[in-house]
Length: 128
Image 1 (cartoon, rainbow, N blue to C red):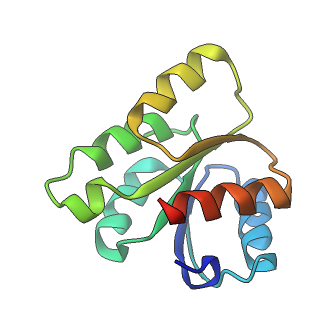
Image 2: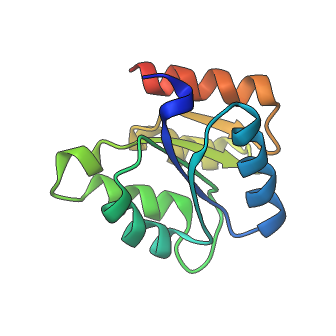
């Protein structure tokens, strides 16, 4: 899939970071973008939107990224439960990364991501 035609959902509780990520994606030519503040809202909308990829923060309230991905993976629809996910977090601790990676995600980037790293991780996720 061409990165520019991807439908991407961004989930982050910090409005500044959401704006930064959305602007970064627009700079990459990705225009089919949706943004949500927490995992609960995102899960409801992902079911409707059926995105190609979700970029999500780890630590959010009331539903964080790890719980969001667990719920996503538990959905009965295979297309949705297998949605590609990349975690974006300022938390790069071994414990958090160790909890996130076994959820079948396509990557984990430390915020704020460099544009070239973000593009490479997205392209890699969309290829698999």
